[in-house]
Length: 482
Image 1 (spheres, one colour):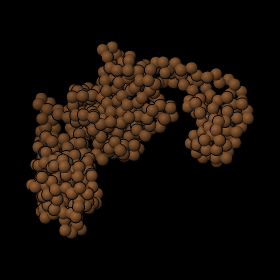
Image 2 (tube, helix red, strand yellow):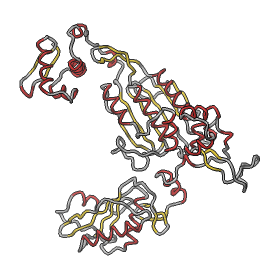
Image 3 (cartoon, one colour):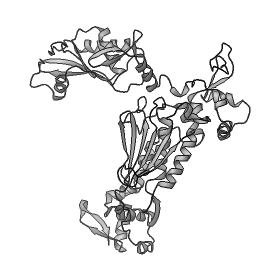
């Protein structure tokens, strides 16, 4: 039975009441450095967790630590036993009654696979055990210790690459002919040097080396038949007529190399994205229901960053009446999380990303998801939703909710065009037409580099010219159409 005084912090009591588990472990103060290191490495290789020093594991009794600095030093000693050493947040000291506990947090999604004395450990329930060989291979790939794209597909040779696609790539990078195409692709990480020649009959390597072999990246970028080795490296696009999935839909399975898939996906979008009339400035313009650059960025992101080691599912593009979804197999890579994905810069498939950048599909600056957020905001649509679910990364763009929403009556703008309003005033009017009212702070957000007094005069001028009506006084002031 746990000893938990009534004045204990609620968060810590909640941790203790759940008992030991995969992401929580208790130790007494005098735990050996090796035992503590094993639990830390196991959590680091699984889903992270919390370790509390000063709790008796068997009885659950809160014992406390006599010298917190010494206990914290023990934590650092344990972290240094790991290979590579664990870099963790500084442990904190928590108080329960008259007892003090040292709280050690092992973050989820650390960038390496960690070992202790040559053993790769993980967590199973409340126990720390060696990782199974298959799980270790998966973890090495997930965390980028071994890149799947740089491995050599079984029995693949240079004859499995399309010379025309390679020529297209060499033209894109300004190939001058000073080195062989094989040397160029080798330096790009698409080929590996052959340590032994393959038998034409068995496909096995002989003891005689020479030449190059294609990697999975080369097969995906330049292969004649990429799906021969990776059947799920495809994109399934579907357009549904209503707001939910149904038996009626338009479907296209998109195959081939990654550049070909992106071109086919763009063609599918142009054919299936509906056009709606939006107010752009003081003009009515027909635009796609979602910003085309935002959807294109999502597709490029999915193709460039999906986990190609996961077979059994493909990338999904779903279009319905009120939303667009892109599903990409695999969780976010390395240190990228839902909290930092707009700023993080990490690529699971660095070779593929570089090649797609060379071909003009993607910038190497990062995920590009920040551009999706910006494009949706500029189109006056809801922010995109980012989710990780069941080993899949999903992005949802929200459009207008119903067909009726898309037939909203837009005002006659001829009277305002005749006023010769400035570009700033036109932006203010467009905002007002979309939102029904505008305040001084709204106008300042639209024109952040313009002095507040200049913006005040703009609004006063529009009132005097009969475009707007001023409502309220002082801080409660806002403006509406006259």
